[in-house]
Length: 303
Image (cartoon, rainbow, N blue to C red; front, side, top):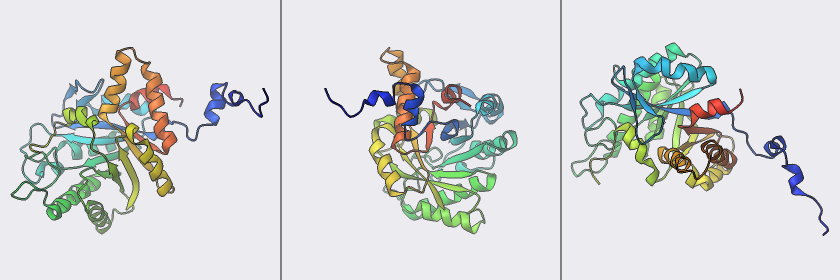
């Protein structure tokens, strides 16, 4: 048989295989989602998210200190208020004594080089569980919702957040947040990470368990897409459309739990599957991966 080349010659060794990959996973690519609750001493297991917990601000040093030493460079904070009085406009979202703002200040004091992003949404803080303010008929009232979201984002930035990440998907909030940051002199000091594509998915279930939120009834630098694995084509398309902008993807709670469940059932090895999933996201074009596997990758990946 006459052939012009033997392809196996290029990937018979792990190193030569890595040379042919479009992107290599590095520790700095991983951003760790952290659930911060309003009990300052909390460390509460989340049953549907293996190995993950809700944390109080007084426990952050013992929790994150070892991970920072292993190379953790960034986190994203999700507030989980359990004790506050919720209302129709999500007043507790930017309470100076609330979990997110307190966590920002504590983390900046403990780990000055740690990059701190904050989820910006109202659903955890509203009495109705939706991401904005409502009309009398229960539909979203867009204009005051956008204003309130921009206000919350600004207060997180003023507290010291390096990045605000609105996840509400209400029209107009990116422009409003950008203007708020610029007017406050923070346009060049706080990154705005936009959900460019957020799909309805069955994979958000464990997150809602972790965050304690579910609806009660029926200067842009970064873009991100979630879920990640089912939408690799969208990640690839976004990379082509905006090649000069960093692109993030969120390996959401259901993706994480699914990999754990398969490994527990003996379908595959956990580490092997975690790498396969993350490498597919990097290969599609993601340069930042929000993942609950971050602690494991800090251990698995070389320094």
